[in-house]
Image 1 (cartoon, rainbow, N blue to C red):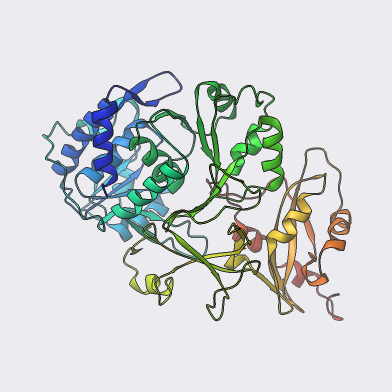
Image 2 (cartoon, rainbow, N blue to C red):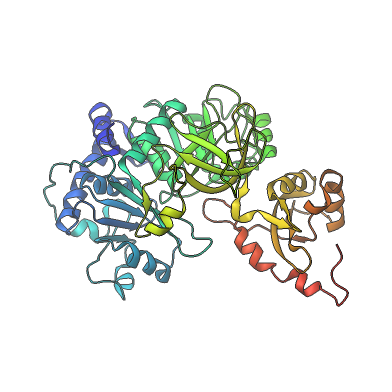
Length: 510
């Protein structure tokens, strides 16, 4: 098995003149040009003191040059650490203290602010569009030959979202990245003939370690959009073949009249992940375009684990069977006993895609693995008789009300069927009688008039009493992170006092 960087070099030999990236203004960077820039940046990193095993952190806007920085980091045997561009200076200090990067690459003008209070061993340099920034002012250094690394050596650190405490740095090896890339390339039949619409951020596993890795190792071309722009995506579809996105992409695209079977005729694959895709969106997209969205399942620590098939049935509401070489099981939460098809339990995974460890957290790493080496994902799911996995929710989102397990997704799917509802989120909040009770936060369609009892009445015939929300609250939108995942921890916090406020001396009604 070759590393991502080795596969990139092979691609350059075969497709050097091809465009790797095309920006909205028409600027094209060929594979040869990106390789030349990669060599130059590798020399600069070495001149800045970066050695094999050191960390190179990057918190920069989405630029084609960032791909070269990532590849240059791999070339010198260092560990690439991409960071969310939304992080504030105080948040970034945690990552700097925890990872201790040798070099931190930021946006122009941010160097001094970040350096204040940071360890003196960190070099802060900047990267801007078209070769601007202090990283490019370090002088040309002759690049050494690519460092030969072991496949099980660290290649990258991705920090988890940190919704329940401090973020943890998942250490991904060269084997993790290369094996997952090769598996997906074959599963989705991705080749040098593909033209990808890339509108995802590149500090996340989907945008970087799926979309970019698959492209630079096959010779595909990417329309490199700086952010989600639905109209730009529609305009690019006639000359593209693949779109990788999150559910928000598809809901917003469905709001564009230009999304039709004709405009998507040249497209061969629409991928969705990072958050659940509703069956309604899946159905509406198929009706409008004739294409079935391919939903897959992955996470920071594992890369991609499951995928609906490229050839075969793509089941709405499922993430498909495990990818080749990867083992998925659903177990009973308390006993770790594997469950039969049709029963909900904790999802565990094993395979060459699974991360090595949490950075500097050996005890936390040990907690997240079973005795026989399976990673505990923290997700709840169910496998059907055909081997397709459906995600029920996060383990921490499980609601235990009056001693009964309540799975939010089951309730959300019913609420979302109401014609006045755009989307919903069900969370558990403290309840003086039940311990915890489900409530629904509902986003109505624009101009829709709906009251809580109408919502509850529509789902009452389909749910046991203990599953029915004890309250409905309306909102203009659900809080989401940059990848479109609903931030349920925030909703729990916002509504934590709901039933305490309603409690009377006679006790709450049940």
